[in-house]
Length: 424
Ligand code: TXT
Image (cartoon, rainbow, N blue to C red; front, top):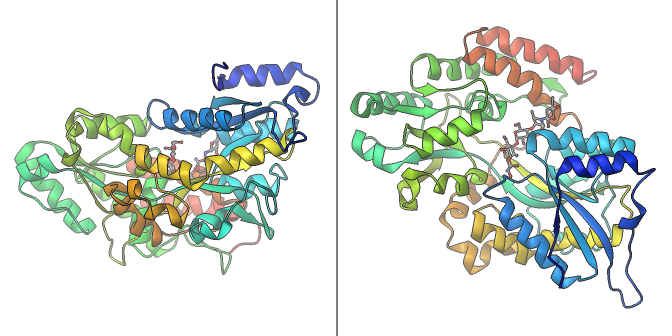
C-alpha cells in the first residue's frame, strides 16, 4: 500500500534538477494500453501552509487513488517565491514542475514566455462552458487556453461584530463612514478601526477603484495610475493612516494583519476568502458568527474590489503530459471545487458548483460570489503581474510618510511607461 503523495521541499527538487542532465526522464509516463496513466507528476502548490494546503494535499492523494500508477510529488512553494522560481526552472528546463498553481496574473506571462502547454482539446479542459467567464479570461492568451481556473476571489471588509456592538457602530459603506466608525471604535474601546496592509499594493486597488481610477486603461494603452483619481486614492489611504483610522506595517503585512484581527486588536481588515480558514483559527473567531464580511468601502466616485485567483497550468516541458492533464482536470473538477469551497470557503470557478448543497449554504461563498461577479478585472497581459512591484514601493513609502501621494503615483506611472512600451 503506497504511503500516498510524496511531499518534498522545493530545495530538494531544485538541487536534484541541478545535478540531473536535462529533465528527469523517470517522471515520464503515458496512458498504458488500457488508457491507464502512470509515472510521476510534480505539482507546485502556492496555497497557505497550515490552512489551505491540507485540503489540496488531500485532493492530490485522492487523485492517486483513482490513478494508482501515478505518483504525485506535492511541493508547497510560497506565493511570493513561486513566480520567479518557476520562470527560472522553466527557462533552464531543470526542476520545473509538471503542474503549477499559477496566479491569475502569472498565467499570461508564463504563456507569453512559452512555458505552458496549450490545453485546448486535451483532457485537462473538461466542460469548459462551466467556467465563470471572468475566471476563464486569465487562462486565455493568443487565442489559446493555457490554464484551468481553480479558484477566483476578491476582497471585502472583515469585521469583529463584538467590537462593533461594544462601540455601537454599523458597518461603514464609504471611506468617510470608515473614518467616523474607526474614530468611535477608538473612543469607545481604545482599539484601532482598520488594519490596512502596507506591504502589498493589492490592498490599494479597492481605494483606487473607489476614486474612479485604475492602474492602466488597456483599451487606450494609457497609464492611468498617476491621474487625478490615482492621486486622490493615494491621498485617501495616507489619510486613513495619518488620521489614526488605520494602522499599517511596511513588512510582514499578512502576518501582522491576521494577528491583529484574530486577537481583537483591530476591529476591521480588508481581506479575501483565502484568509478565512486562518481567521477562524483566531481567538476572536472561535465563534465563527462573530466574523462579519461586508463590501469594501466606496470612495468619492464609486465602489469596486479587485479580481484575483489561481489557475492550474501544465509546464510545456513536462515529460508526463497525459498524467499532468488528468491531474489538472481532477483538481479543477466540480467535485474537487465543491470540497475546496466546503472546507476552505474558497470560491469555485465552475458555475455548476454554486448549486451544490455543501456550497450553497456557505455564507462566505454566498457573500463573495456577487462581489466576484462585479469585481474589477485587470488586463490579462504579460505585464499585469509586474505592475505591483513599482506600485508597492511607492504605496509603502506614502503610507510611511517617505513620499507624498502625488510623487508616489507619479513615480509609479513613470515606471509603468518604461515597462509598457509605447503606452501613453
Ligand atoms: C513577485 C503581483 C494579487 C491572494 C496563498 O497563496 C514575486 O513573486 C504579481 O503577480 C494579484 O492578483 C489572491 O488569491 C493563497 O492561497 C517575485 O518573486 C507577482 O505575484 C497578484 O497579481 C491573489 O489573487 C492565495 O489565495 C518577485 O521577484 C508579484 N510578486 C499580485 O501579485 C492576490 O494576488 C493568496 O493570494 C517579484 C507581486 O505582484 C498580488 O496581489 C493575493 O492574495 C496568496 O497566498 C519582484 O518584482 C508583487 C500582489 O501581492 C494578494 O496578496 C497571497 O496571500 C514580485
